[in-house]
Image 1 (cartoon, one colour):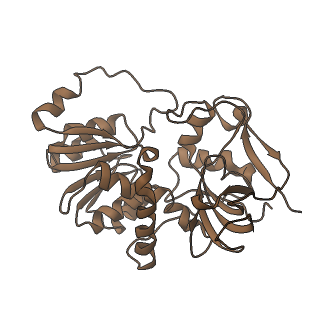
Image 2 (image 1 turned 120 degrees about the vertical axis):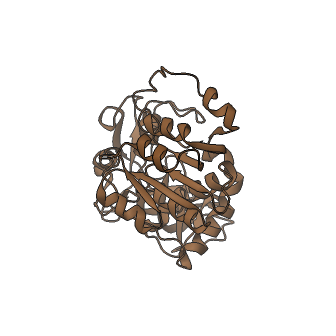
Image 3 (image 1 turned 90 degrees about the vertical axis):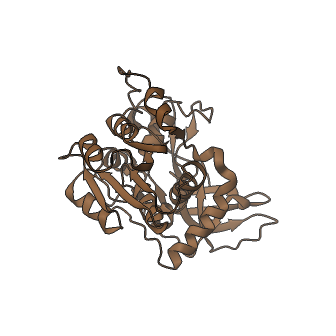
Length: 336
C-alpha cells in the first residue's frame, strides 16, 4: 500500500513520545516548479530534534504543529511544470519537515542531484557541507595547523577529521571508547583521546599545550574548557553545538571569564551556524561530491539498523548516548 505518513510535532514538549506522533496525509501532485520525492533514507539529528520539539531553535520561529526532520535522500516520482529534473532522478534534500516522512514536495531548485539514493549522501548533504564550510569560513583552517575535534567518530566529526587531514593538518580527535578511537585514527588522526579512560585536559596540556591552532567542538562542558585552556596564540575555538548541555540548559560557569584566557593569546571563540552561511552550501556540496567520487573522502554510516518512522525515538536515543560510529539514519524504503 502506498503511504505518506510523517512525524509531526503536535505540541512543544521534551521527548518524541510527548511531542510527536505519526500522521497520514494524502499524496498530492507537485505544483509549478516543484517535485515530489519518495524518501528512501532520512538522517537522524537527535540534538536538533530535541531543540525543535521544545521550540528552541534560535533562527527558526517554531510553533506546533509542524513537521520534523531535515535531511533525506530519495527518488523523484512526480514533477510539476517548468522543472528540468526527471522522474527517477536520485536527489538529496535539506528541508525542515521534509525528512521524517515517506514523501515530500519541494521546490526543484532546492534539491541536490546525486548518483544514487544511498544513505552515504546523508553524510555529505548537509553534514559534510557543514564540516567544510565550518573549517573554511569560520575556522579559517590553514595547511599544517594543529586541529582538535570533539565527537570525532560521529557523523559530522569523522568528516572533519578527513577534511583536516586532507589539508595537511595534524589532527587530534576526541571520542568515547577504543573502537571509536581506532576508527578516528584509521582516518588519519595522529592521536585520539578516549575520554572514557583518559583525562582530556591532562592529555592536551601535556602533549599539545598552546599549540592547538583550531579546536572544533560540538560537545561543550569540560571539553570546551580544555580546548580554551590549550589553544595556541591566535588560535580559534569553533563552537558548533554544545551537546552536553543543550537539552537541560547550559550550566553556570564558576571560574574567571573566558576573555581572561583568550586576550593574552589573541585567540578567539567563534560560533558556527550553518544556516547563516547558505551562500557557500552549493559549492561545498559540489566539491565534496567530487572528493567522494575520487576516493578522497569516505563516509561512515552507523551499522545499527533503524527501519520506519516508528523507530525514530530509538535511533535518536542511540545517537544521543554516543553509540553510533558515523551517521545515524532511518531506512524508509520498506515503510512505504
